[in-house]
Length: 168
Image 1 (tube, rainbow, N blue to C red):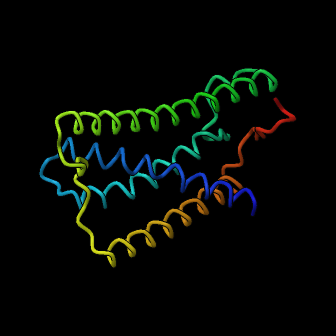
Image 2 (cartoon, rainbow, N blue to C red):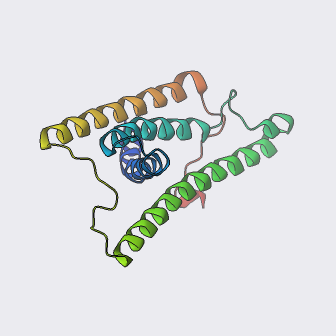
């Protein structure tokens, strides 16, 4: 239960930059989509990308890195550790890139004296905003629960690493 709460908290914190990056990508690549629909589209994309990254970051017999299958268990574990570190690096570089892009957009807007609403934030009523936030939180928690149940029952990761002070 403690692990589930920690993962839920991380998913919640990580979802904000992912939502903003998907929102920005949708708005800049498809001008026919309004800001409200771009925002609503970015929510399920964020949930799916967080869930996919969680499954791919924990190699099991189905998703085990192909090189690890051909080595002895100790070398295979090193390959799996390397795979986990690469996934973490990929995920954080994605988040950092989106934050840098947002910073560039805001800086450019401030430089040419555009209004602060450079992201074209969706026009939501307070009731709509509350409904969307509650629905997103429920869906995020359900997705986290499903992924954790899959990892605990069907997928069963081949190597579980604990990143604490004793292991470093």
